[in-house]
Image (cartoon, rainbow, N blue to C red; front, side, top):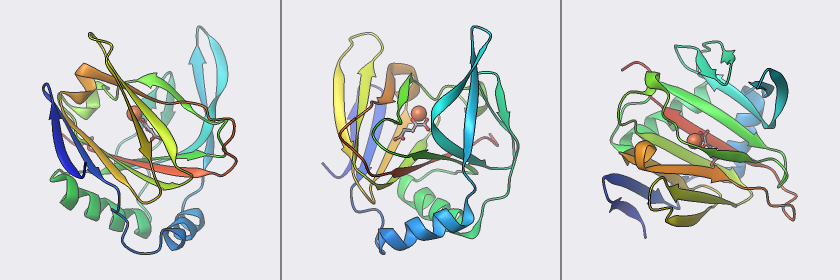
Length: 190
Ligand SMILES: O=C(O)CCC(=O)C(=O)O
Ligand SMILES: [Fe+2]
């Protein structure tokens, strides 16, 4: 399944070979141009280290679970990838959240990207490099589940009412020892 697919009022786009050039070259450019940070979230008044590293680039701050990442200009490699992602997704992006999963212990829990600053029906493009990881989708009401494998060089786009109808997660995979980079392109400008 390559290209767009509609499920209810949600659209999913999938391009497994989105990265045409050498993905290891891209990996090296990202590592040279991006400073990764340990994120901290506050849950019930307690501060926790998030189970991955991250970096935020865009004209506005990014707020999540009591933490704020300041605005930061995109480095050249991310400007280029963002332009390519906009063309593919047929959408406008101005920001990117970089997630770095050091190994299969790093993960991301169930959530929707439904922060008000993303707008009503945000288009989010997710580019993956490195170790392939399972990506789970769960319908909020029917509880239907879909599992994708986000492979090296792939682009997944979530559009339409995706963030209302579905939650997603990147589960732990303890056998995986290689790292993975994920870039999620978003639009905060409105
Ligand atoms: O790493 C992934 O594929 C998921 C990232 C994600 O859901 C997010 O940044 O909101
Ligand atoms: Fe997400």
